[in-house]
Image (cartoon, rainbow, N blue to C red):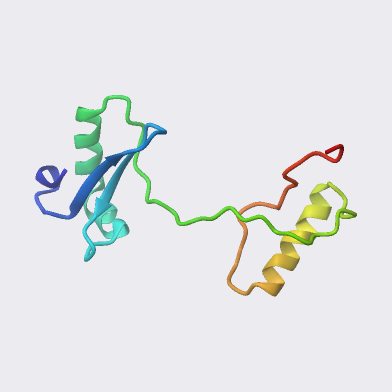
Length: 109
């Protein structure tokens, strides 16, 4: 990759168990800067090495959390879960769930 972009910006390349390829940038380089200036070169190099490659995207930091203590009387509806999402955002400034919460088990369990 560094040969393709003509700079030493990629520290390592890792292959995940989900068949993804991770390009880890050097500590002094952000992924957004590398993609902004070198997306086409990286895309071409990846596709020439891995023909099944479908595209590039910047990694996002995200988390899955389990919240205990939620009343089970909340309706299992879009409106009910949006109420929970709103409360999570109100009581945790800066936290913005990408989708409404959901139950981990069915009502019968």
